[in-house]
Amino acid sequence: MEDVCAKFVSQKISKTRWRPLPAAALQPPDLFATGSWDNEDNRISIWSVGDLGNVGLNGEYQGEPQLLCDIRHNGDVMDMQFLDQERIVVASSTGTVTVFRHHQNNQTLSANQRWEKAHYHVDQDTSCGGAACTGVICNNPEIVTVGEDGRINLFRADQKDAVRTIDNADSSTLHAVTFLRTTEILTVNSIGQLKIWDLRQQRNEPSQIFSLTGDRVPLHCVDRHPNQQHVVATGGQDGMLSVWDIRQGTMPVSLLNAHEAEMWEVHFHPSNPDHLFTCSEDGSLWHWDTSTDVAEKPSFLHQGGRSTTYFSHNTINQSVVSAWLSNDPTKDRMEITNLIPNQTLSVNSLDILGPCLVYGTDAEAIYVNRQLFA
Image (cartoon, rainbow, N blue to C red; front, top):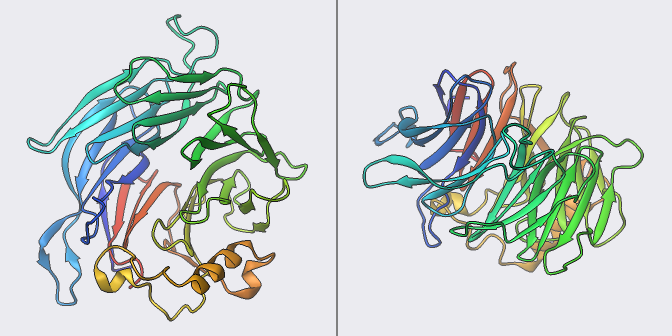
């Protein structure tokens, strides 16, 4: 794919995340962060997408991503989310959760705040015994973390102690978490269950439990539809894509055959959610397109960044929802494209914003595609 810029970085990349754009921004994203794993010296790095000055003949951008700054990170980077334009929350395999601040005036990174051993197996105070923090989700100023220890923590940026901890939230490993709404989160675990937690309730019990039938396949990732809070997509060890309607039933609405190995991440496009992206241990990254008319390009491509008009018609909105929730979406209309035809090593992470995709691999490379829908 000629639209993709590759950068070889001599470290296995576990996470890639675009810096969020300000609310009114029309330009495409220009900065992203990466985290590494399985290296002697793991790092958090901030990159700019390349040389914006040099535009080629067809308007494509020249130049590979440029490293702006980086900082050492203790342990593997298990998850990473921007809290705001300057702060990144990082989950470590040591169980610690760190907020790093990106100082844009002098391009440096510093550790802004740290919750040591937010996740632990036996005792928080012993020298060993940290349990990997596997997932983090932010809704500024709130930060929710989940871990191998089955614990859920609710932190608030700039507050030293956890606001709330649910110690035995799960008897198995929690792998990922997402906000359903400001007071509700959804977790996925290693025995194929989704659990909804209402943070207003003092009870340490989930308000609802969903599960994959009988198989108990570990689930690794979850994402919520940006406009339809009840639509959730998950992926796991068997590489299947599951779409759930959490208003009804306890089983997925659609189970779609996808990757040949573990699915590591699933993301709805934030402003164009009839597009969904998944990446896998099998070295592939799939673009799932349920838009009604594949020839109809989403409007944000003509405006340079954000979708303002595309979902204003209720009819389109309905069709998008029914596309993900129809019993067999593949029969109706679904285009699936593997964006990396000949990759061999695991694609660990991806992120999408506007027309831009960034992903990172075990082949020690990061890739940026700035014309996703071209």
